[in-house]
Amino acid sequence: MSKSLIMVTNITQAMKGKSILLRNGIRADIVRTPNRSEMHSCGYSIYVPYKTDEAEKILNQYGVKIIGRTERVGGDDLS
Image 1 (spheres, rainbow, N blue to C red):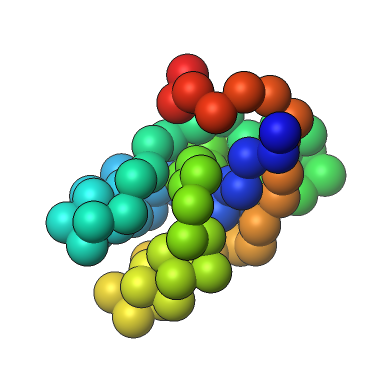
Image 2 (cartoon, helix red, strand yellow):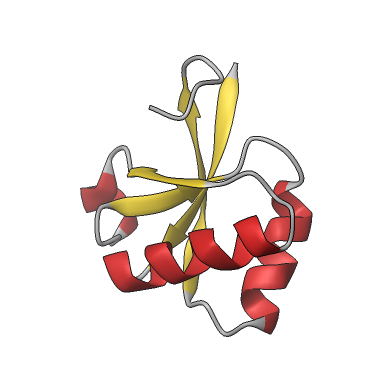
């Protein structure tokens, strides 16, 4: 199963984004970004297992700086 990851510019944006999504009823957590050197990421992403498109729209509305999205292969846990 693939995991949808929203890549952000720094850990502060990841923490802000997770909080915003949880307040809006969307499950989210902060995870390490795989292959971050290729993505120019800070190394952290927001994992959103469901409603990723909706989550990205909400984050944009709240001014969270998004680099892009990537996938990670694994189970559905938030570890």
